[in-house]
Amino acid sequence: DLRLGRPLLAALALLAALDWLCQRLLPPPAALAVLAAAGWIALSRLARPQRLPVATRAVLITGCDSGFGKETAKKLDSMGFTVLATVLELNSPGAIELRTCCSPRLRLLQMDLTKPGDISRVLEFTKAHTTSTGLWGLVNNAGHNEVVADAELSPVATFRSCMEVNFFGALELTKGLLPLLRSSRGRIVTVGSPAGDMPYPCLGAYGTSKAAVALLMDTFSCELLPWGVKVSIIQPGCFKTESVRNVGQWEKRKQLLLANLPQELLQAYGKDYIEHLHGQFLHSLRLAMSDLTPVVDAITDALLAARPRRRYYPGQGLGLMYFIHYYLPEGLRRRFLQAFFISHCLPRALQPGQPGTTPPQDAAQDPNLSPGPSPAVAR
Image (cartoon, rainbow, N blue to C red; front, side):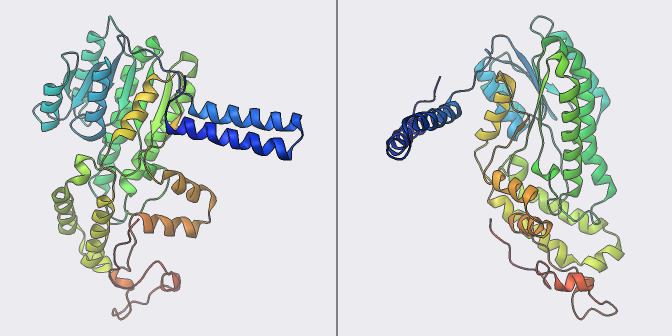
């Protein structure tokens, strides 16, 4: 089963050209072997992956108020899934949209992953309403991040709140649903982040929680293999979800950070330093992808593919980013992330001319750190 279109036509044209070249440069047995190998590689990559039928499968998706969760709920509902969609507020704009445009099969459930009572209520509802169909899949999509700043500037409470939603909430919900998923030999799909694989500047709290949940899911993947449960992690690039587009929200969080920052840290780093980070963060968001389809398609494939991948990387530039992270020297990796996301400037205490301070030799020689705010770097 091949995808008809330009890729298939291009592959056939290249194979024809390769056949012509092999006939003139290689003896017949070698030419046949090369052409057969090239044809197998090309056509296997173009082959449509085998998908399981939707039938009466039920899926629970968290974080459907907006973004990936809302769009995935709409897509799976249109395919015939029985969708249990959790939202923070049953009357939020996203919940109202789902209630309006989706079929009666979709059920909206209120859940805050930081509240054990909410999780218990969703677990009981899911068990009671999937007795006939079973639960085929869990999509851990709900995520949380409330600050963009150096780890030293980020309150410890921020690390805890990210872990509560992104790690402990996903852990408690997944463990509670494992009896159903083991019974159906189903799927667990978790939306992670490249920030959990590499040290993105100013995303320490968010990145560590995503790293923790990715390792947890890798552990589940190994432990649940005998039960037939397959586990996938989605590592999206930068997409324009509703939370990303809400510039006013990020401005309020920056002002709250400045208002609660200890005076010693504010003196050492300076307000200009935090303003600079905030400006570069907003600049990077303007370059995010607005079409969420690649992530929705990856989640759908992880739920229905006969052989789902362990990792999906939807989004532009992720292949280059991971290549640089895994294979290039540490200095180049750091510079690339700064150019791609946030390029730091020198904190106030390290800037030349500050009384009683002498910039460390390493910082003074680092070409990535320059006095005062620097212009935002486009990707």
